[in-house]
Structure formats: C-alpha cells, structure tokens
Image (cartoon, rainbow, N blue to C red; front, side):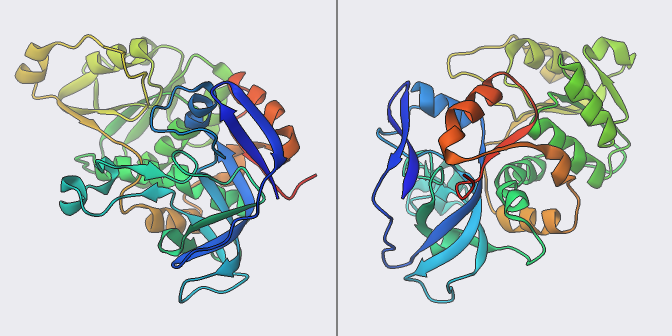
Amino acid sequence: MRAVVVETPGRFVVREVADPVPRAGEVVVRVGAVGICGTDLHIVAGEFPPTPYPIVPGHEFAGEIVASEAAGWRDGDRVAVDPSLFCGVCHYCGIGRGNLCERWGAIGDTVDGAMAEYVAVPAANCHRLPDAMSMAHGALVEPLSCAVHAFDRLPRELGAHYLLYGAGTMGLLMAQLARAAGAASVSVVDVNTARLEVAASLGADAVATDAAEFGRPHGWEVVIDCTGVVAAIEDGLRRVRRGGVYQQFGVAPGPATAAVSPFRIYNDEISIVGSMAVLRSFGRAVELMARGVIAADAMITHTFGLAEFPDALRTFRDGAGRKIQIAPGQP
C-alpha cells in the first residue's frame, strides 16, 4: 500500500509500505479521509517528543473495515477511530483520566496512523458511523471529540457570554458548541479577517481582530484560547469577568510562559482549566456530528490525494482554508 512516511524529523516521503495485518482484537480500516492538524506539523518537524521515527502520521480519520480479528465487526462497517492509546494500569488510567496516561500514546502520533491507504487499529477504538455520514465528516469527529472534552471541563451555566481566541478549525468547532450549549453570546477574535467572516456565518454574535473592539468592560464569563499564542493567552486572561473561567485549549510550545496576576486569580475568583485531547467524548462527538450540530461542510475546504501530501502540508502552513483532509483513495 502507499503511505506518507516521516522517516526522520524534517524528511518525509510517499512510498510503498507493507499492508497492515490485524492482530487479535484489531481491525484493518481502509482510510476514507484523514485530516491534517497542528500536531502533524510538529511530528514532521520533529517537535512532538513522544513520536518515534519512522512513522506514518494521521490521527483524525474515518474509513471502512476490510479485515477483522475482533468479535462484533465485519467487512464493510464504516467507522471513525478514536486514536487514543491508554495503558489502562497507571495511576491516571486507574482514576479515569486516561488522557493523562503516564504511557500515553496515539495512533498517528506514537504508532503508525492513517496517512495511508490502510491502517490497523484496536477494534475497541472504533465507533460506527451512520450510513448517511460521509467519510469527510467522519474524519472531523476526532477534532470535535477534543472540543466536546473541552466543554466537559468547563463549569458551564446557561446564558453565559463566551469569548474565543482563534477562528481556525478548533475555534470554529468550539464556537458552534458554545451556541449549542446555551451561550447568551459568542464573540470571536482572530487576526485573519477571512476566518472571522466564516465565524460570523456560523453564528458568532461578534467578531474582531482585537477583543478591545467589543467594548465589554466587565469581561466574559467564559474565555477560551484556541490559539496557543502567548499574546492571545495573556490578553484572554485579562478579559475574564470576576468569578469567570479561563480555559487553555490551544496548544502552546512546551517552553512558552505567559504572565498572569496571582492576586487577580485570588481576588476575582478566576478559575483556570486546561483540556488535553479526548476522554470519553468520541461517541458523543459522532452523535453531535450526525445531528448536524456542526456545519461540517463549511469546515472542510481542501481535499488532497496521498501523493499531494506536500501540497496539503504547505496549504496548512500557509493558513489557507480551514480543515484540510487527505483522501487516500483519491488519485
């Protein structure tokens, strides 16, 4: 089969590799669509420490089962796959926090993933897709499941006002979930005005390149960073209303630091929460996607074949479009 192989940091090729064979408890999935995200960029660049090389990247994907060594699955079943690989025995797995697993792994991050025609995965990680759901929409389930977990981490109340930094794929998903979760208003900040136009079209009440433009002196009950950019993080921390919550959802570089006022956290009772990856949220993300809570067609702007992976990566780096996907079966 053909696959994208990151052979060493900074060097990748599209080449023939051995077809995967399912072990006990596994299935082989013919990949229908796989999304590119920031983690893939870090893997290609050698900036994601858990990744061994060589590796086939790709952790946002959906496809069709073509071989099975697991009960309950048969050829032709259409699935989206949770990439999470938890050890199941460490302290964090034992207390139900598998996404913090001491031996955390993920398909496409620490073992071969779905930037390929086929991939072998644990059957337990597969979630059935409704017949009406396209593979492209199915591949959006993984990033949506991260957003669902982020909302699980928020102390929510109906009628709260939300401020989101970033109108990329994750920011747009979070904005749509905020609407579905009963937000009184959703305001979105991004330096890219084209992305702001999309956010407005998907239901954001206000958009701006600077939160100061919103004229909300008392701040917002919920502020969420979806950028990982220190300047945005520091600005967002200043705009949380007294008694409100700030969430770090965007992925900042490991060494990055941001200035925060400890006195204000104390005096204004500001809650700060993080959200990392997926935890018991994948199945719900399938249901939300099936119900049309997310405008999936508006999220996907580019689809490339496997051989076009360099062009897809370049398009992602340039910030063009929104969700960029690879369709391995596409010429």
